[in-house]
Image 1 (tube, helix red, strand yellow):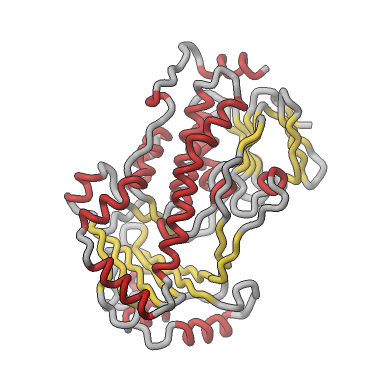
Image 2: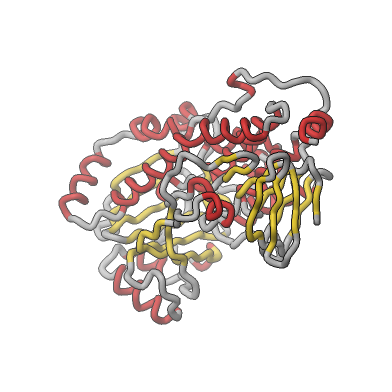
Length: 416
């Protein structure tokens, strides 16, 4: 039995779990993170982060490190996959910075993960455990007990399920709830920029949209690498096939597309594919001393590039609530759910709507999309995205006052 009546147990060592461990640890709250993999690491591909995430990074003390290791693209571009015509552009210029005080960035997931991991390891009240596969939990009223696949038990004051799309914690809370497969797959590749043909754009985030497919790419690591993601709809989404079969499928789906797309496709490693899925929004992800967070609570499609962003916002927001909770964990978890459910559900639902727009298969729908998007100026896009990219208010800023005294002592006194 591994028990500390004051520690918060976190299941999952991804970006959401590590952000939560760091946010709680900086508040003086003892944390034990349980990760099923042999190492707490990340699969190495790029992610995009909107300006809304940087206030959370500031709270975590890592904003400067993220800026330093990020690429700041000049624009988001959406192009027609066949004609090459520009459908939409969101420039990240001085006008953008008038709307949003922080940048829009692309960063290697491993780099972001390591920033978080290094910061967690510097905190004496954060314990990171690998090779721990959680199988079930029990809310015992005054504490939570977690069971593992190898017969161990861990106890703590609370449990946070940050274990992703196929969350074990969520499956116990909502047994009939399953991820929603959409019939699309993604192939991801990072290549050295020196191998990229000169005809390929290498500063912007570039999205080529076609019927039931797209490809997106952008630079990483001081423009020394290009991150490429090819996405398409296929009946074979649930099958594991060999790279030659993947190559033949891609060539068929992306035939007749723009030469720049073809040049990027030639760079791709097709040895692995990821079936894509999200979750239906739910109103209840907290109960008693247990809550979900990040993808476990509100897994989303990639259309708004906000899966990681919502998880990091969750982490900082939840830590702020627990810091002012006066020991009432259940009320803090319910408040967390209440305050975050509409924002995160909106990300899920608007991402679904955009997914259909990006991948429109009907020619008339694509013509309407072209007219709608090309009528919009940059300011229209900023206004449209302000609900998402503007920073959120933290609980303290909403008028919840902190008690004086040492955080760690207050937490221990409240949870014994």
